[in-house]
Amino acid sequence: MAQTERSPALDQIVDLVTYPIDQRGSDRYSMVVAAAMAGLRSQGCAVIKDLIRPEAIARMNNEIAARKHTTHFSTDSINPYFHTSVDPQYPDHHPVNTFIERSSGFIPGDSWDETCSIDALFRSPELGAFLADCLELPELHCYADPLAGLTANILDPGQQFTWHFDTNEFAVTILVQEAAVGGEFEYYPAIRSPTDEGFDTIAALLASADAANQIEGVHSLDLRPGDLQIFRGRYSLHRVKRVAADSVPRHAAIFAFTEQPDVIGRVERTQQLFGRVLPEHTAAELVRVRSDTLID
Ligand SMILES: O=C(O)CCC(=O)C(=O)O
Ligand SMILES: [Fe+2]
Image (cartoon, rainbow, N blue to C red; front, top):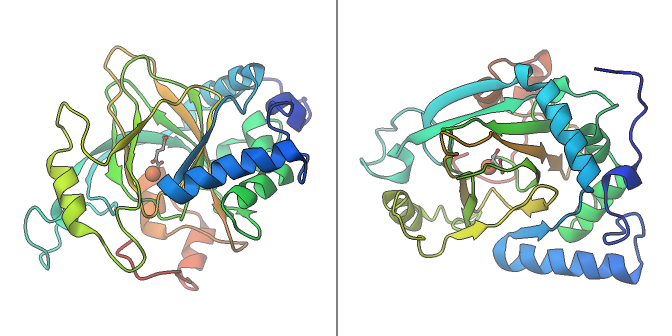
C-alpha cells in the first residue's frame, strides 16, 4: 500500500454541499444540527444519511480491507454489561446472569495512520464541533484510548454482536460495508438511566430476543454505506443482528469521543475486545473517574 499520500481533505470525505459541517452558524448547518438533535433527544439516535461521499466510502473500505489482518476477532458469551461470568448475587434469568453470543472483531486504533480517510475524518475539528453541537455538549475530544478511540467493527459471515450497553455515553458510527443479509442495528432507546437500571424491561427484551417478529419498543435502523449514526449507547440496549453465513462481511468505522480530554479505557474490557493492553491502560486504571454508578 502506498504510504506517500497526504492526509485527505475534509471535502474529499464529507458531502459538504448537503452537510456543511465546516460552516458553523450557516442556516443549513443549523438545520442539520437541529434534525440530529431532535433524534438524539427523542430516541437517543440520529442518522445523517450519505454524509460520506461515495468515493470516500470506497476508499475507507479499502483501508479496512488492507488492515483486516490486524482485526482481533473474539467470541464470548456476554451479559448486557460485557461480563462473562455468573454473579451469584442475582437470580438466574436476571439480565446480569443472561449471556448471549458476541462474535466480532475490532481493527484497533493503532492500525491506522494519518493517510487514512477514516483517521482524517475522526480527527477533523469540524466533525468534533459538529457532533458536539448535535449532542448539545460544549466540546468533544477524540477518545484518547490508543486502541479503542478509532476502530472498525468487523462482523464476518455468521457473526453477531448481541445486546449490550456501551461504556461510553455515545458512539459515532459510519457503516462502510453492509451485509447482504442480516447485520441490522437494533436498539431500545433509554432502557436505563443514570438512576434506574431498567432490569425488568431488559429481562423481557432478552427473553424475546430471538423472536421472529419485531420486539415491542425495539427500533431497527436501515443504515446504508456512507450514513453516519450518532448513538447514546450507554442507556440504550443495542445489538447488531447476525450476518448471514453467505453474506459479505459487515464493516463499520466507530469513532469514540469524550467530553473530557485524555480518557483511556479499562484494562479488562480492552483485553476482552483487543486481546492486549498497552502501558497507558494499566496506568489509567489507577486514576479512574467515573460519571455514574451503573454496573458497567
Ligand atoms: O457495529 C456497530 O454498528 C456498532 C457495534 C456496537 O454496538 C459496539 O461496537 O459497541
Ligand atoms: Fe455498542
